[in-house]
Image (cartoon, rainbow, N blue to C red; front, side, top):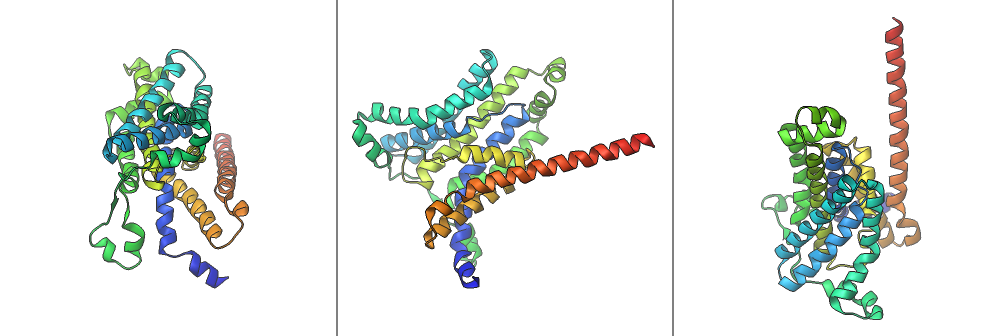
Length: 322
């Protein structure tokens, strides 16, 4: 057993944790920002799928990973703002809007591939990945000095540019939410929109800002999926990461740092499942590990919150009796 663990937990395993966590972390930060404004964006999965498609296609057509990344970000923001139009202006239930976006991300993207590329149905299913493959993948960065440190260099150096950006954005998001006036307004809208409106804060504007930023973050996640994690787009390639991000946001208490650690936990679970499969464990047993961890994590989180609430209630009741 010890030998098995030694072959399992090597530098390449921890390297893969950071790589796998990247798209989850982008989506988790998207969920954190939008939740602070009092909105639940369950359409992150669909936004990532749509962004992944347009990012890889634009990179292919323009022969530039920068063009592909910008396209993915633009599409992510536009889809999120469109969700806002339906939810805020047309008063459609935001959950239903998110479900619709997820359905478009799953089936609509495949339809778009067929329309855009003029492929027949039979060829489309077999060629969606190879079609969108581009030599212009988002580059990896080898960090000077760190790359020369034994073990540490193997884990921390050589990742995609977006991997480093994802972890840097954890700090940026915290600064935005807690050290800037727009962040204060955004949190005020989420906590008490009527009070925020009474002091001159535009509730509608801040909600659009929040959902637009969530689309931007999801766009980064989609771009990573098709232009770094995989060499092109394929159907349902996001594989539930948008939903896992919602769980990570909840388990992290809605805070950037705590949500990052939750995302790392789910990244570890997925990397562990992949590693077990490579060691000969039946994939039917290994592949569900991330989703089982998600369910268990939410269960423990719910029990913890319930226990904490019960203790606070008892303390308040005891203090009142005195």
